[in-house]
Image (tube, rainbow, N blue to C red; front, side, top):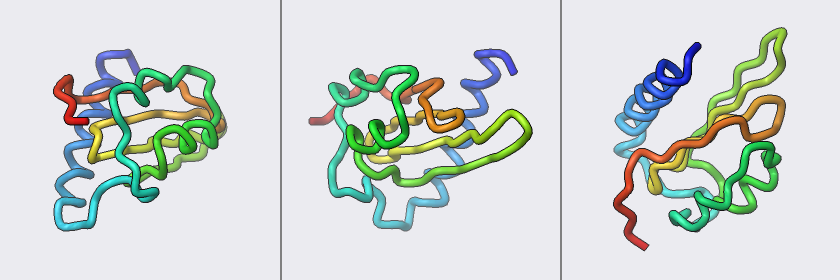
Length: 102
């Protein structure tokens, strides 16, 4: 899957999840709202535990395992942050807005 197709897929999944979570409590499970400063500190290769320690518990996550290993997509809906991990390490990150309220 190409980079632009991956981004479109990520965005579509984010929209679907946000619609499904509209009636939920929302927010990070850890009570912390991730900021743009926190997002900027997320690096490729960071471990899952480092990521959660930085951003707090994600609003939602999806795991998929196949012959290539485990892929996890984590979403912080209140901060519009989406991170993909492969075998427990960050492989891509995205935020869907440039307007931050901190």
